[in-house]
Image 1: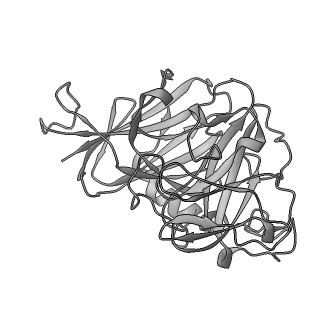
Image 2: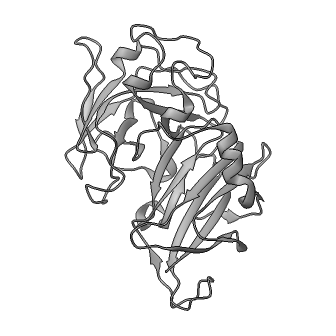
Length: 306
């Protein structure tokens, strides 16, 4: 993605222990959430021109099979905050910010009459997209927002309230039980991202050569500095400058975790962080993004697959 690679602070060996100490993903829903335009199509680098254009979608992304990254069926709540999670930007009651998942994709809002958010249909799977408005502008100087989704059964505040304070939760959302994703509205200022690429290790040495193709359709689990998680799939879309990457965009400062598991199409071999050899086999890679990071940096994780 037309960005410069840079060195990063990495602690691969200790990452799994650190995650266990700071958060657990045992209750987080499976699958992925992401923001799109009303028709479910993507925008470059998750940058939107207007907040009214931003909709939440879930499950398989554009051009992905129906079974890819499907969400657990059930009723969900969503909210929008600043990247730190400190400031709630959604302005309506939690019960108005609902959606229902059936067979891994969003199929409706499920909110009470009179306060349900606008919906549209996405271009790929006939799933429902749900508008994030109403919400306030982010205080983040770079225009970055964070969207959250959690099963309604995991929400810890009254549904008829807009805001509440519960220890261990962000506005009623427990980070370890939530899916998160970042997006940006207005402006063209870049923000760092973390891109994971998988390649077929034909030569068997764990280092990619020109004859070894990239593999699309493979997943990683990203956990943000607050403990919210999401699934990202590798894919190719030259129009969006996506080059066989499972990409995490508009990342905030702090430590991010990328979990790489064995999966159909990839038995994990040697993993690289900006061309630095890491461990062999399934692992969690910790990437610490400093507050003074170059906004054009891309952190590359390359995974050898057999």
